[in-house]
Image 1: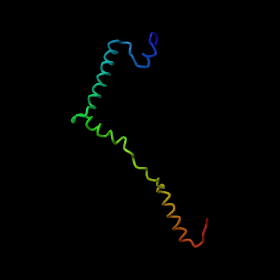
Image 2: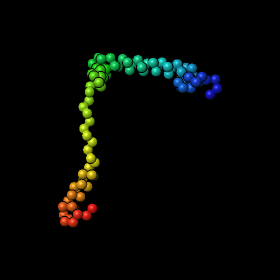
Image 3: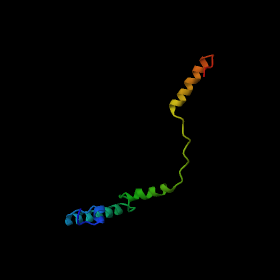
Image 4: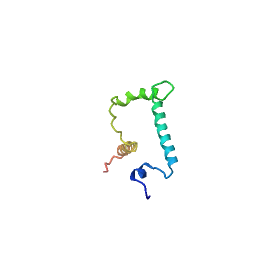
Length: 91
């Protein structure tokens, strides 16, 4: 576009100043409502969100060891049964 600065292209300004003003006001209003919603008051989401905050920093238990895929265990069981039935060891 001719006559625009790089910041206007990055931030997404339009060519209509009234629309730019409306988007700026609505963006600020959205951030204000989000911050208000995080207040730790019972009917707002902040009462739950701040209660979950300590859980983010608790030490989690170590992951259990990975299990073998189920098909491998079945293959091993079938192989053992076949070898038990065959008196001749074929490898």
